[in-house]
Length: 539
Image 1: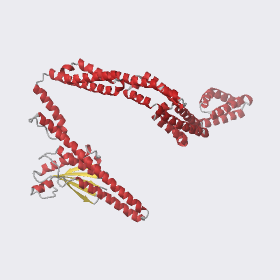
Image 2: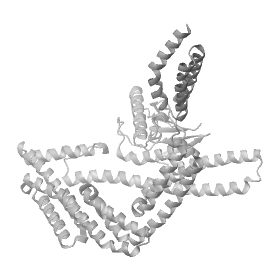
Image 3: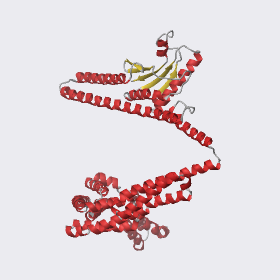
Image 4: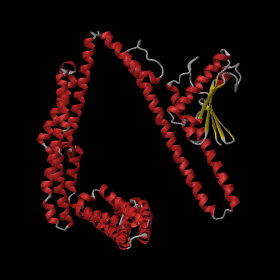
């Protein structure tokens, strides 16, 4: 029986030895030691046949499986773990990133490369658990990088003109258009900076003239093959479309700017930026001439008469005018139609400017008041008891709320709205909205008033906003209810979309004529009843 067990164990080990060897060798020194022990014990079978050797083999295999399981669960430390446990390595990593952003790797290439190598060494040592060596390498890397930063400052002083030309070449797009040539000049620039690192200043200065020439040539060639080439392509494309026939004025202007760009660059290469401006304008004009030509051809294909072209123009103006509200009147002279659009747009822009000025003034005032309150708080903070401090905080909040309320009140004149305070809540009763009779669309003349409402809501960022629409008693109850609801909904929509107020904060409802605030027997009373109420509910 013992011999049979021995034969079975020999066969099992022989069949599975390669599998375990491959698994354990990959798991590190500890598992390798277990493998060695297992190999030695299997040899015992030839010396001590029978059950005793079998016990040793099974014991070794059990140990092997336990250690193998432990080896399989071991996880190497990640970089984030190392940065957390080794402050000096984390500091070096951050400083290397910042240094590369400041181009220290170009201005002091040798020092930067040495610091980077020490960083990699410190990481490798930390992964192996060699704490002292890892910290020493990281600290040395920080010192090396500090010296590199000083060398980079000196290089900037010596190579300031080269840096300027280099920046112009990069701005023109040389790294993308002439990759290989730009890389070669960059290598020359790094080599000059290495001379600065070695304190060979005169030799570094000798490298400046060829570097200036190389970067300047790259800039000029890039403009010719970049912006200038683009402008020429646009011009040739417009010419091929016969733009000189359909858009002669624009086409000639493009031609003139392109000629100016070419002559400027040829006469004085240092005026590359000016030539670039002419080329960009030529490109825009050529593209514009091409679009005019395309539109003119559409008119020709459709055999548009002058009347057809003017009607098409009216349609375009109507589309532009739609967001501004009231329709255009094409029965009046064309200049008055254009003037109408201009006035609406100017009014809206001016209203926004006025509101921004008011907001800026009030914000400055709020800052002043806050500064005063902070000074007062610092003076009395040490002497206040817990109860007195609590009371002071309450008064501070109430005073701040009063200031906000006063600010909101100051935004509206009596013809626009009345502002009431109800505890912590604020009611803005707006009678200054203008809606056409039976209409619900918000017209442009209401935009200034709506901007003031938006500004008021922003003063209470945690409030809920309830919009309620009201009418006078003229007309049927059903009609008034519908008008009030639609007007309230449109105001709420404006606050969400234009005022960027969270939709979840806003609700809208219409009450028609059911909640008058004045008599409907007089015109003044009916005017007050035709209103939009904005209630700011502060929890």
